[in-house]
Image (cartoon, rainbow over all chains, first blue to last red):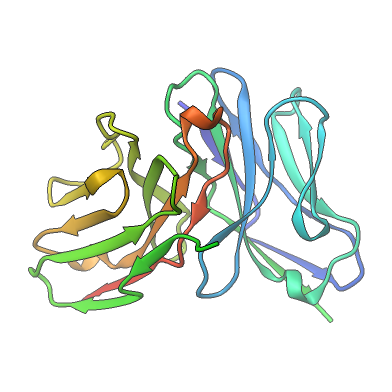
Length: 115
Length: 117
């Protein structure tokens, strides 16, 4: 069965500093990995995805994520955080062996960027 | 273009009542998903529709929950005899689906906040 772990409930970072939000996964086949962001009282917005190819994936709003197969990780990063980045971030995985496109989501990490 | 829309945005009901939640997916998207987001929890998969195929109902928590997708477009999630533990935000998402080559991201609606008193 596929699963995702986001080990940190909350990440605090000062504006202008780099940020990392951690995600590790477990799948039987090839992983297809996604990051979503949720602003207060809003639905989830897609940030980026890894399907195949370059391990460093660039996405919306200056975010990027690095796929590491040996560590089964897909950490979300941004070189310089903004206060407006404060939100709830979800990592999700789909197992390439399954026929459906069902995503399994992590429990989310709240990012708080202080001015 | 229009995104995924859901109605109502908020629903307050009494324990034991039935509720219907509606989702309008993005036009042309063949895949439609329902998730539940409880306070402090991640997203819990409920059900998945892909075109005319039989839906994947493996995430429905009990037989009080059911969902339909009419004409391959609009979907309705029905919860019968609601319980207080059903209180959550119910999110709908759509994607182009398998015929579009797979691996597509899902586009989420704003959700329906259900409160069962």
